[in-house]
Image (cartoon, rainbow, N blue to C red):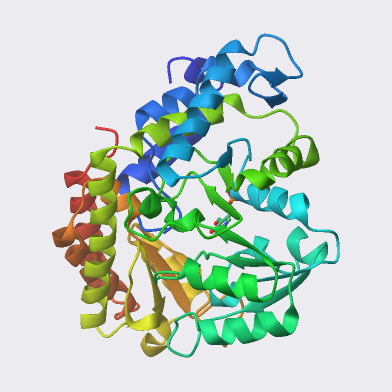
Length: 410
Ligand code: PLP
């Protein structure tokens, strides 16, 4: 503030606006969170000035003695928390992490089998418009009519497709993923297994969701979702792939690492090893379950009937409202969610029949089951009574009070 306001008032105003938005609205986007001030302090530090191509102890630039410390701290903490043999902390994002894994062991045209976008998968798991579907031949598996992964079907498909790599992990799957079964399937069809745990990394760190690391050749994640760190990515892999992964990140697909972000990843990974972090993750899961029950009591349909993790996928067809409209109506009352395809969705990806709701950010603000009841009530007031101004005002009052009672960055 002190430096930005005089130097660039327009930008300072945009940041102030965003800060107010975060403070005054309920953030229910499942992939977002509020980092600690320590994470932000590391990210806003002089480390942003440093070039450090290469890895600790073998850089292409001088003067790396301090950034080496930061990178080693991040690496060692990630190894410890997830039990990984090798860690690369340089990917600028989850997408960069996934791309580097593909380039480490695949050749252009190789087959990859990942969860379909419309079923909860991510763009980078072989979708045609993404590099992963342009350079490789992408095949997609999905969920059954109950919204659960059907491992027998995935096995059958994997044995037919014979992919070089199977990708497990999702952006909108509310249930536990069985990595052991994925590993068996990969062995049966002689494929590598990559697990993208971006959404559930915090739950895995807190030992609330099974850890994919013992089962997969490669595990990727973002650091900014449930893990509550800076925006960025990580790759964890078996020692046998260490060199390949490191050279696929640099010089394969990236240049100089973002040392200020790596420093912030180190801070976040230190926080992720604490008792407080474990209790936080337990509350995230309890809150998602509580919110799901409230919504069900108001007649909302949840894909798979509920949740085991931090998110809910709500199928809005029973309420006769599209995901697109729901996102706008909720935002108008100060509740931020994102529209999301549901399995078998008749709508396009821009319209959709569902919304995805996550509890990581509101739980960071300190909210518990009681507030989930309030939030569920507000969501119902809005989505079950479109156009009713009185109900909208009632919902807005709930949002204002909850936000005021649970400030961020006190
Ligand atoms: N993988 C999964 C499962 C995701 O949900 C996401 C982001 O939403 C990513 C990867 C991509 O991360 P990023 O946006 O940092 O590239």
